[in-house]
Length: 122
Image (tube, rainbow, N blue to C red; front, top):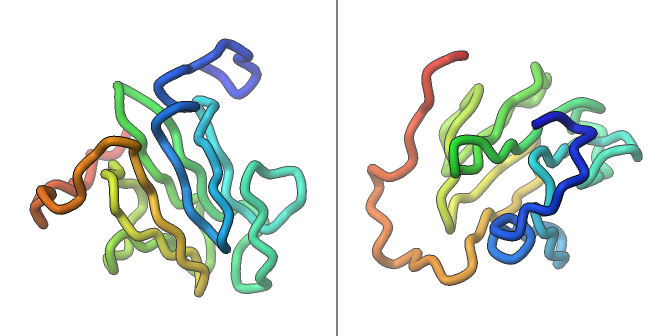
């Protein structure tokens, strides 16, 4: 699936959300970009955030966040990561900008500390 793929991905649009700055972003595409420059899906207006900071991909039935060689790094639940699968309730930090990944209907209370996993490099 490329960035130019215009098909509908109902599981994403209906169920995956990114909560940031009192706004809700539906992750309705196979790739969602999180960066400072205006042509991105989620624009983060903070000089500490890189113009090409991070992206979230929907792959193999899960959402994975990738650091795009940013200077400030990507942190998930306090841990610096290059890429990591996301689970409902995960906290993402890009520079000083905090956001939360949510899946509708997922129970955060039942989530153990062991559910977030680091994926092998591709």
